[in-house]
Structure formats: C-alpha cells, structure tokens
Amino acid sequence: MSGFGVTVDADGEPLPARPSPTASGADGDPRALLGPSTAVVDQTVTPVADDVTPALPVTVESCDGETVVVDDTSRILAVDLYGTLAEIVFSLGLGDHVVGRDASTGFPQAADLPLVTPGGHDMNAEAILELDPTVVLTDASVGPPEVQQQLRDAGIPVIFFDDARDLDRIPSQIRAVAGALGVPQAGEELVERTSGEIASALALAPSGADPLRIAFLYTRGGMVQLLAGPGSGADAMIRSIGAIDVGTDIGLDRPFTQITSEALIEAAPDVIIMMTKGLESIGGVDGMLRLPGVAQTPAGEKLRVVDMADSVLLSFGPRTGRTIEALAHAVYEP
Image: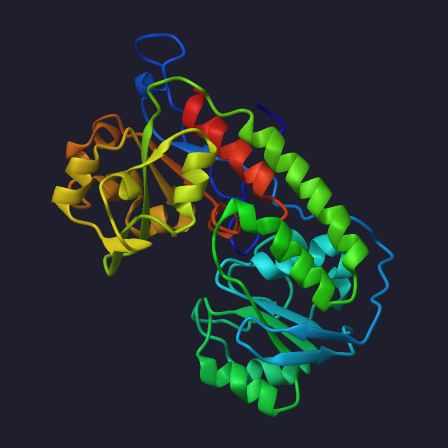
C-alpha cells in the first residue's frame, strides 16, 4: 500500500514525521512490530465535478423532525464534530459556496475559512450570523441546541443530519447532503466513487484466524482519557482493517468510557490507535505509557501506537477509503 501524501494537522500544517516501526521476530507477523507509526493520509478533497448547479428550491425532512425549505445555496455552512458534512459539500463540487468551518474541517481547501466552533463542540452564534449563511448543515454532535434554534429564529434554514459513525451509512449521508443542496446527480457520482474506494480498501484486510486486538484511546491532556467502544466510530474503523475492537470485545456499553487499568489490562490490545493531537496532548509515547494500564498491555510493552490526523480518522466521509488504507498500512507494515 503506497501513494500516501504528507500528514497535516487540523490547521493544515505539516506534522513532524514519527519513527517507523521496526520488524522483530517472524517475518510478516504484525505482532512482531516494535515502536510507533503514523497513518499518513492525503487530506486533499477532490470534487466529483467543478460546474455543479443546484436545482432549487428543495424541501428537506431534517433529522430533528422539522421540514426545511432550501432555496439558496450561495452561502453554505456545514458544521459537525468530525468535519464530515463540510467534506461532503466540498466533494460534491460546492466548496466555493462554503463560508465557514468547524474545528475538524482541516483539509487544505478549507483552511482559510473562518472558524465557527472555537471550542470544538460549541457553535458560536455571533460568528455564524456574521457570515450570513443561506443554509446551515449540522447534526447532534455539536451545539448547543439553543444556538441552532437561534439561527432558525433568524430565518436561516438549518438541516440536521444523522450523526452515526458507521461505514454503511456513508452513502445515505452523501445522498442526504446532496439532496438538501439540490445536486442529487453529483451525490450519486460521489457515492459511486466513495463506495469503490472503500471496497478496495476493505479488501486489503488480512483474513487470518488470529486478528490483532486494537484499542482506540481518545485523550485531550490529563482531563480527557477515554477508551472507545461500540458506536464510537473507532470500532468500525478497527473492524475495517480486519482487527478486533477491544472496547467492544470486553463488553463496554458506551461509545467512550473512562480509561481504567483493569479495563485496558483485560483488553490486552496489540496496537493502540490515537488521534495525533490527542497523543501530542499527553506528551507523546512517553505520556501514553503513563495512562492507566497501558504499560502492562502488549501494545505498551512494544510501544505499538498508531496515530492519525484528528480531522480524518473518524470523519466517515468521501475520504474514508483512503483512511482505511492508510490505517492498514500503519498497523500491518514496518
């Protein structure tokens, strides 16, 4: 697997290269790899067309139960926790219409857009109103709901989309966004391209009888230290490369749970996956080893942590095929 670009962070800045893992022991055995690695993804968003013309007006059933009429897409704002909606809009060929971005929309074409979620999860109503959007695309992963209602009260069409993190939902999400913006044909073209890339990436997963055990740890300094489980999105990405999500395997019943020594030692991950900025926020690999239980796991003993840029790992959008391929490359190859 090759052809990956330079890794950049959520602000579009190049990240320093990490040392590549080294092989030890049996040739071809991913459990024999030692040391950290970075899953490198080309973050450029490629539109399916450059001359898309929306057919408007469109009546949309928003996921919050409201019926919304969209009659102007000249100033689009797409905001969610992982940057998925903006990625879809740009991929549909409507990037020139986007007027602002969330903190996770980190691909180069959007880097200079004004930020409207300075806290990551929270939308800033004043900043959004100053941009004078003609339509806002969002979901329940950001808020607060009072801000989204304030935008509606100001006469702005606000459409909520499904915020589930799952590979199977990507085509329907693309179609929903394309339909809401009056470009359904571009949506079908994007679904076809995205589905093909995902299918090719899934075919790279090993088919052996002894899959790797992988944990996804979400950290933000010393205050946020979570182990992912079912419904986190990380579980789907781990399954996509033919591995076992340990959070799900040990019976966690929430997408994210506070890390404990007991849980991690029981989970016994062979590899730990983290977001790049999350790993940096705790002091890199040395800081990871100080998290509860990590040093007592096979991954901790071999320093097997794979990091990936925050803005792509859980986006579940048009670049997901690339993301799966890069993750498999970093996990299985020295």
